[in-house]
Structure formats: C-alpha cells, structure tokens
Image (cartoon, rainbow, N blue to C red; front, side, top):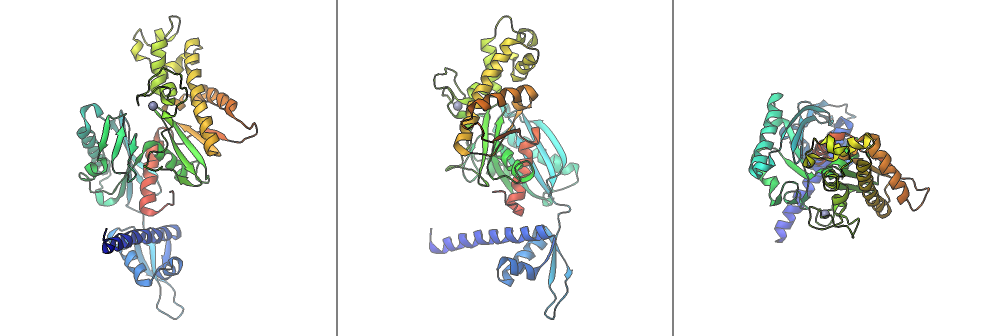
Length: 406
Ligand SMILES: [Zn+2]
C-alpha cells in the first residue's frame, strides 16, 4: 500500500474511533456540552464539532438543545442523546427457523417475527427470506430503513475474521459464501455478522449474567455444540475467527461414531441434540418405551423424545442421556481446566430439558474437578431461545454506539 493510502486508512480508522467515543459520552451523559466533549476526549474543538454535527444532522442520534450557562466566554452548545424513533434489527438465522426482532436502543424487543429458513430451497431463497422478514418487521411499525441504525445477524458456522464471508457452515451446507455482501446489496442497512454462539456470549455480556464478569463461557448445546468464550473481558475470536468450535473437540479417540465434520469421537457426535436422537435410533432396545413414543417410526426419535422417556424412567433412554451428559461434562471440564472461567452458562435446545439435564450434567462435572474447592458456577444461560437474537442486537449497539462489549 502506498504511504498516502495508509494515511487515508489510518485517518478513517481514527475518525471512526473518535466518533464512537463521542457518541458513547453523549449516550452515557444523556446531555453534555460540546466544550465538555473537547475536554473529556482531548480532541481539537473543530474535530469534535465536525463529528457532533454528523451525529446530529446525518445520523440523527442526538440533537442540539440550546446553550448552557456561560462564565464569561461563549455559551456552551448542549447536545442531547436522542434515541427516540431509532431501532436495531436482530436476526438469529437458524437451520429450520429465522427469528427476527426489532428492538429499541435499550435492547428492548418491540416486535418479533419467525419464519421458516427455507435452506433446502437454496442459498438465494434464504437471502430472499431474510430480506422479506426485515421488510415485514419495519412495515408493521410503519418504519423504513432510515429508522434503523444496523442489522445484526447470527449464523451457525465458521465466519472469516472480517465477519463478511461464511467460510463453512455444515448446518446450511454453505462454503465460502459472501453473505454480508449478498444481504447488504438487498438492504440499505449497515450489517453486522457474527457466529450465533458467540452472540449468545455477547448477549450475556451486554444484558445478561455476564455483565460484571471478566471470564466466562457460554456453551450452546443444541442441534450442534459450540462455545462463546470471554477471557479477561474480551470475546475471543481466534487467529482466523474460528474460536469456540468446542463441538469438534475430540472426547473419545476410540469412538467409532462419525461426526458431521467427518472425524470420529467429536463431542458433537456424542452429546448434541442431533446425536442423542441418532444414538437412540441406532441402539434402540426392544423393551424401551421409545418404541411406543415414536409410534413405530424409529427415524422420528429425537433428543426431546429421549428426555421424555427418561422422565418416564425408561432405562435405555436414561443410559443414552447419561452417556451424552458424561461426554459433555468431560468437554466442559476440559474447558474449565484450560481457561479458568468463574462461570459457565449452558444454553441451547437440549439444555431446556429442565432438572433432568442439569442433574446429570452437574453430577458429572463435579467428578471432573481437580480441586474439590474450586468454585466454578455452572448455570443456565439467559434469554432461552432469544439468546442469539439478543446478542445480535448487542452486536449492533456495540458497533454503532460503542457499548464497549469487545
Ligand atoms: Zn466433528
């Protein structure tokens, strides 16, 4: 890159950072004078004026509200944060359903729509569905894209470090798709993309149980398994942006069970919702209650049915669940030894199986502790099925308003 180009990039980055700091100060203080902004940021007065003008006139995130009291010099110009009429869109792009929400700038959900993802109809149809969902969310409130400061989207899979390309998503059968570009080309809204489990961690950090925590892990046990890791206050991205693929950690090298990634012995192949259903199908005993629960259609057995059979004291179902929880607890135990979190929040569809899930998991994790007095709290993740979508709202608020989440 030529020297001039480097300088240009540097000044753009500086501008963005300065804008974020100024907007954050306006938001925190609600009303603040331009002179105070100059004092607090250490920036030159013309720079502050230019940025505040942009925030007020172009972005309409604040307004001028007169002048303050003067001690002799020119009276200070007061700026007020103005969140009214501004919204954030958040989307959790699931393999079967898309959940979309419209939220205010305090992350309160004001509107929600769910619709089928339509992934079997192809990538273009998924993009069409996302666009139509956004349009419906806005039109139901009589809004247009000018009222929206950004759209956050959570996707299961490996995203590139710049959060533009889905390098690989086995759930969708996507490889190397330029998701951000393809969606942005259809919507004139700033778009922010992130892995859906990392968004669960971001949601906890912004609005949930992780607000005052520096070291915690969110484990998502659903159709697959993944983790969002916060170390010393930072959500960990990894060298290429692939951190947290906890489901593909080898738990049993002797296992013959093949994972979706093609290898054997992965945690996901032993303990995910998909594998609990699959393992019950292939190992089903004649005496198990599952034969009745599935109405003779063995291929219909899923994780929920297995947990239902456990509740009815079915030995085979209990053994299947216990084996899965044992694998999961070995995995979580390894994470605890490696990263020393104070809290592990477990969420995702499988975790919603109540006491049964928690009793089995916490009993097994207890056995993994090297130090008996080690205090690691294992708790249910917050927001239940809204966890990723709250995270996607937090992602936008962080990027645009500077919540200091990452
Ligand atoms: Zn795997």
